[in-house]
Image 1 (cartoon, rainbow, N blue to C red):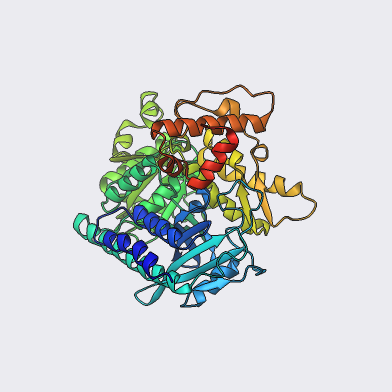
Image 2: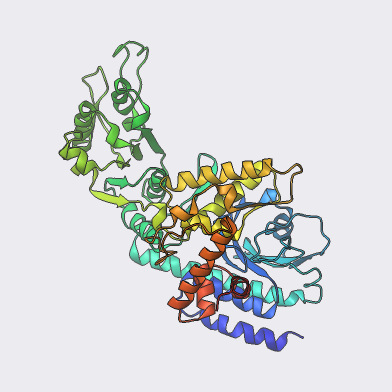
Length: 517
């Protein structure tokens, strides 16, 4: 029944295996081909990373899905799919919650997934991830043959294998060190450097470039951009990754204790020093030391830090004995240290010693649609924390996040999502299966927040609030955004849909509702 269409869909993908394509493009083509053969409303490719499933590509799902991280133990459908070697089709009336409820790109009232099927991808005879299909129409998958999905699963596994081998070959040629790893845990939490924007990709390339060396790195950027995660990525991609990353927040200690924390002390060095203690430098011997907020160090301590960096030798507080250490230093600050030097608040020689390789972390407002991926990550965290089946953003809420200027960067976004989810849940007398955050829940001042420097809304000026209120304001914003995007792509609706991160059919429906030509 599917032989000829299946062959037609598979042949271009087989041809892609011999081509040097970006991973995202490989996976996007795979999902599009699958949807052309197996009609569905959404498809996803997810990679298994320990106890988490990480979406690598989605088609028909909201952009923020790419930022979500699904804990397998919290999603029974994923558990079932991973436990079976053959494709699985769930009954339309299955009571198991679907991870994609509320995430399928649709502007209709029905948000819940009714039909779901998927299968495990096996690479080197081990489960590598999942391929999933979902439909909003009950019974849509009942007539489909699972053999077709199995064929795509086999090709998906081949695609993944090719992508990984190409990457491994490139790494062996370029460097002996591993590429900066993105999917790592920090403090027992699944935390990542999430993003796909050009600014974020440039940052990852800089990390990859310098991580394998022992150069001192000065990580700069505004408060809340994730400088500590950059430091972690640098350490994990270094030759010292098998050793601990020792960290010290220089702003969190009284001035009298900073020197002891850095260099250690001997018994009786000061009141309360009842025993000998090693400092952070000795603890990081052979490893990496991360000094956060290094601009807060007192001038007296800066001189001693400079000496250790120059000679590799230190003295514990109250001792004359020298200790030699081998430490790779990563420092971070949200201050303009060059200005601090000019104002006499920071030593020029220490500044030059720290900034051997300066690394600037971009603010969130310069990262375009990355805000939606990051929002998805925090939405999934809060969905689990609040015990919800689904936590999603409305189209208006997504537009609001894109329009906001984010003075507090990623940290502000994290707190905003947590606060908004809690407040929105509190308005419901009964716990809903799907909780949707609207623009009003986010409490962002959209009209004043729209900036023409944002890459996602280029050319759009701040709009006065229409008489119709927030709903009309958001419709006006979306209409203008779609028209600008179509103009850039010369009325190519498929290209516009890809840039906006939504399905083409959904873009057409939204455009008709908004009266876009």
